[in-house]
Figure 1 (cartoon, rainbow, N blue to C red):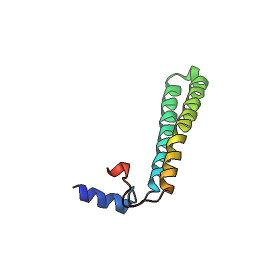
Figure 2: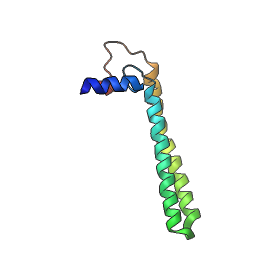
Figure 3: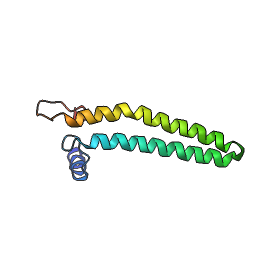
Figure 4: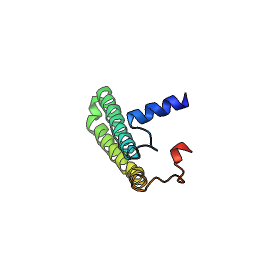
Length: 96
């Protein structure tokens, strides 16, 4: 089963050992998912309480900014990991 999942990850381009650029893409995807989640929650909250729509969206924008700020560090670490060469003695954190 493990070998099958490895083949699927390599075929999809999601194997970190075979294709290291996937780290940055995953971190950016996490940021986008966090912003989408904040927007969906804000939309639901604004729909349920229309009198506070402006305040709800203000807080949502602040949360989206916080998601982006908190995602900068992981993106930088992923970018640095992608730039370092992968040698046979290097232990990849994702694969033990």
